[in-house]
Image 1 (cartoon, helix red, strand yellow):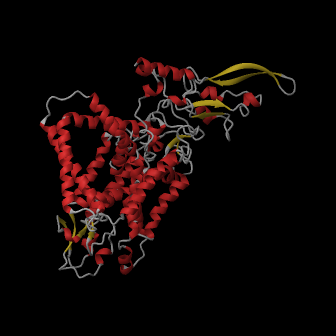
Image 2 (cartoon, rainbow, N blue to C red):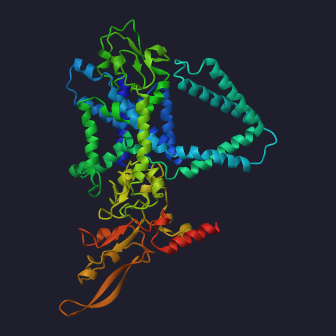
Image 3 (cartoon, one colour):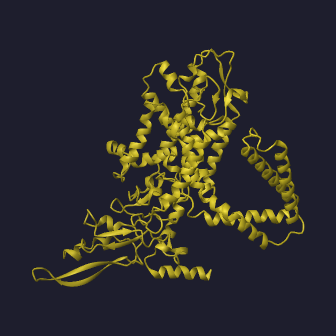
Length: 619
């Protein structure tokens, strides 16, 4: 089985690298290059929380969860490309003898950190639930009053209603248990608890019968739906991409590893690529890999939030490693090559086991086997985490979002340099969808897309922005919208981007607007002819035009010059004028995010805002 696992590791790592390399204009040709990103369960769960939507392709993540609930965390050691890289680096740097290997692979308390990271990130994605639950009662009452009274209730309504009553009664019973410290202090007697629970159930059932099950259930659904829809905007952020292993690997390969390989081989790109602060991304990536030389699979064991999520679901695994205590001699050799530090020599930690099966191969007495439904007494199903620490981690996540958002950089005090790719949704929604995988940056043919640092606030770290000194947005290119796995950049056609055909009434997609720094522009400041920006402007009619003027130079001679001007109604913010400007250090023409199509509140021209308002009134 170990040889089979190694074959799968080679297969999935090779498939991942293949998809990564063909994420290029020359080779893309409809390949599912974002498959690994879409198959990440953490992406599916987190984006479902922030956007209230499960994207069609992200259902692959549900399949991985289903497999985990059957056979455990096979993803981590059989399919995850980053996990496979850690395995390989750990093997390269291993210089320990058997005794040292046994000691280094024992479970440590620091391996619980990943669960706290997961709790914090999911809390950031779930903050909208707090205002939703506060607002929901009023919306439910409003929906109930507006709903027509039902003459008769359907059987299904009664079944669902009874289930809700039972669930509520069980929850109250659990709260009674918690308040009385499991009745150890005698605060509430067993009889009192049963009486209170029964009374609550009777009252809920009587109220449901009086009000009408169908009407009540419809009102609850409608009320929660309205409250959730009103509060999802501005009340959550998606930060799992910072440490999600697939997003981290794609980002690191895109911005750091592949450009470095190209410098040596000149075989990756048609032209060399440069990425803003790529050394930071590369340092983090290789730092995690080198950490394997000190603690094997350190990232997987202690940091990976995806591993933590799968560890929680693996408690339900039907198959797992089982130890025969009769044959076991307590030699501890099974720990020698244990990838997950799951203690197979004792009660197996199901949440930590990677199903590498090394322990079965290393056991000299055949005391270990991979069995279906072994006895529960020989396992530790739940992760070894503290409830207080989990609550603190969740509280940190809940507090991080408002502190980050109120620090500016997203709404009122947005940075003019945060120019998003064409097709991007509005900034708040963008931050609830983007997983920072930088797949759009990888596919961009002109190198204009760059990973942001703090231009978009701390929430926008490593999200894509356009830096026109590095490149420009090609007029007939929508590749970035085709590879985005979560819809942060919605898929658009060339016709929609250019505003032609059925999209003519809406006009082209604008990413920003160009302006002049007249103190640096050659015709304006230095009495020198230059029409480069006008020549390269790709739109028709051109957004950059010139006016002929006559001036007197410092020597008294008469000169005729062409001075450039911007028509903001025509400019789409592609950035080619800034890229080609001969004033290279700080171009005389520059693009800012103002005037972008995705957010009308950032419109430069008042006419655009008024036109949009008139459209809303007519609708």
